[in-house]
Image (cartoon, rainbow, N blue to C red):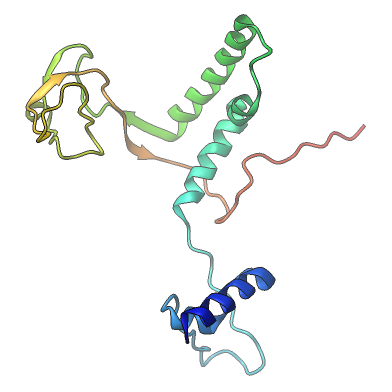
Length: 183
């Protein structure tokens, strides 16, 4: 199939059915043709496989928990410009308390570097390698090669040691349901 043909078939398939046509997916090696199991009676469609969890499912769930406990999304979506600092500060106390409770309930957090901020820290002595960009961010007067032995600890960092989230339907995208009051 030519690239132009693939492009048109893809465009119109997505436009009208919301998915790529099977022949396009096969051509692009995006899927394998599923065989009908021998145990499926003729005329009956095979049962679809259960949806696989996606990384975004955990992110949506965590956001839903923060919204449920602390109205975190409501706070972030609110335009706080018209409010006084005192009003914002009062709201932040409740949001902070709720968010912290969610973190304490569902995550076990630990510092990346268990040290005192503002003190000189040698990377090797805390088990870090400067090339591990996920664990250490070197800032300031970094030499051109990027190799440093240590420096002043400005932030200890955070890592998740364990996480326990409640089960939720895979693919769920609703962070908070709409609330309708019946009078």
